[in-house]
Image 1 (spheres, one colour):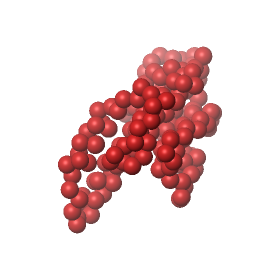
Image 2: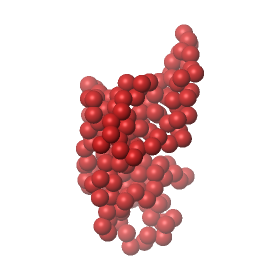
Image 3: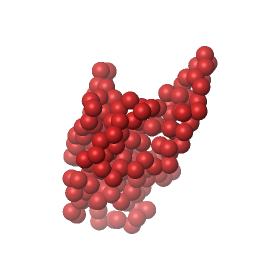
Length: 170
């Protein structure tokens, strides 16, 4: 693995063959030209940009990690009228809907605790839409969570297989 330090974000961001996507580049460009003033709105938007950049980088790290674990990624940031799922992948005969949680510290809440029942229901609905849209009627959805810990020098990834059971219906 190649590792590089992100000058603006202050944590390790490079992993072999990870290329930042357009939203990450846009966020970094905006950060480099953004001046934080006394206004609360500007500070909040700067925090939002950092959060988005961290999430985008975490998804790239998780995607690379999943490939190394034998998963084939089918979709990134799959969006429909019901919402979004970070990644959709396949391994063997299984189809997986993957939620990525990226953190720089674990002081307050563990990412394991961030997949609430409401979030599980939301992801289940998006998965149901995906299966219907792709006409995968004989396929069942399985849910993974990848936790990307960027609190140290080298990001650590943890894979939680079958993180929850889908809750179907609207």
